Amino acid sequence: LDRMAIIVFSGSVDKLMAAATLATGGVAMGLDVELFLTNWGLHAFRKDAWKTNQKISAEYAEFAPAMMAAMQAKNVPSWMDILTQAREIGNLKVMACSQTMELFGMSLDDLEPIVDDTAGVAGFIGDAQDAKLTLFI
Image 1 (cartoon, rainbow, N blue to C red):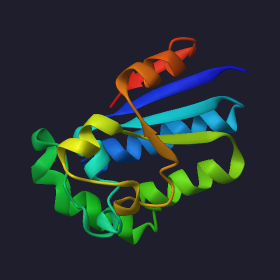
Image 2: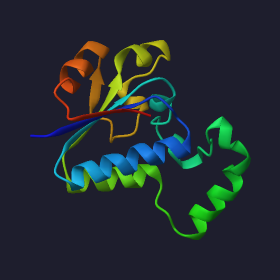
Image 3: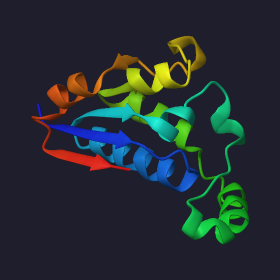
Image 4: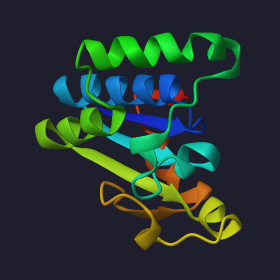
């Protein structure tokens, strides 16, 4: 099967929305999609963190209040809801970086249930090396 690998490094809402939208597009097109959560991207997947996270990339921080208000007014689903939809329509695997988890003293129990398991960098690279598309967000 064709595969897409997405490294989710950023924990800002704008980039998490991009990762979720691309993952959903990938599974909708029949791709197997794997998200590898590391650093601040992993932090964003802590239980319930997505419900209060309103961080936007620094270069666009001045637009954060307007963006959040527009998304709410237009009933745009959260990035977590978009990922949940992706899982419902196709093959989405969500892996947490084991080194980042160790660094922050986290376990799978600390994360949202959409996270399937942990993986090291070598494991992710092994899985991703045959992907048709690899993205870093």
